[in-house]
Image 1 (cartoon, one colour):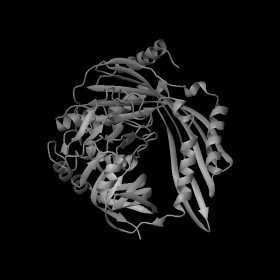
Image 2: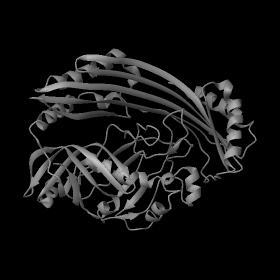
Image 3: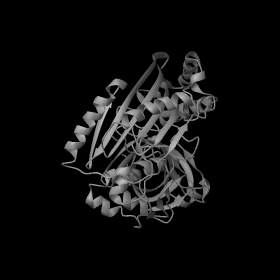
Image 4: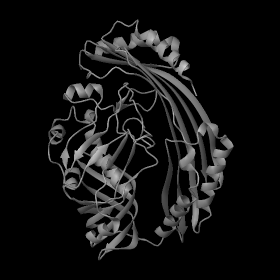
Length: 461
């Protein structure tokens, strides 16, 4: 772990280049990224590897034009600043930007981990991965498995010409994969994922998770495909979270609205978009959560933002550029995958706030419908969405019945927001994240409680 003195030296070196630049604004982001990957496919180990990379992202704002350059060698920084200036000059003729005023900060954030992965030998990580993989493979009717351990350590340094100097460490670990059950030529699979940002603690003692996921795969062999139709559906926390992220959250990212006049009109702050039951929050300030961080890649401290408050649109996510363009407050949500990319507006942790109904009461309220569990891909086009689910259950006369499979839930965002009738009092956030908006973001987490939506179209047989 780099100490405070070493981190300040790195910040000083970046600062020295900034002081020589004659531009309206300049920032330099330097990042060191260390990765470890271990992979199993059934009984065979397929991958064991580690990698360390680093690089610099230079952004220049001059006469309204924003230019960017990326290099991997410190000696190339002066050249990169020149190239960013040249790009800014060209961009200023076609697009002009302003930056919202933000506080100048100087801060160094070090990791607080429970069982630091860097202190765990590679052999122990490999054996833990093998153990969980073997647990799934040993369950009845499981024909194949895959399981991968991923460890990503990022050390980020940010300086700008306004005086901000920030260093922050981030650690993300996960185990993800699937179990495939087979019988008489029929196969069904189920996904599994555990992890977090607080170290190895969440990875130990999780045998029951892998046993249960394999059991669900086997149970899917006996499940009937769901019948297509319109249902009242009860979503579990995974499905609720994916709805919050995919169907709603991306429309709260201001860069997707700034050049879309019709969508911007639909997403005006203060408009009533949904039921009084639904409140959606973006909050990456929760220490210990997968999506936790303190500063974004513009050196701005992240804020908790209530995006939708009892159905009323109350906030959105911003970079400094979009905050200035919209005339709204900065939020600290401008994030890059790593040093190879310029930061863009990203969700960290997004969720539906818990309500006051327990699970049994929710099932009774559904009456006849579907209980849909665990997201399995999906897409959003305009205001319309389609999400797959890994499995589900029929609900009949207020009771959970037999398992069903091959479930696709579809709808329109604005109609669906109005059709949310109840929200549960439980709450769960995902342990593993991911969002592929132009760049991959492993710290994009989601979740919430169980939630009822009426008049939902479900595709099936």
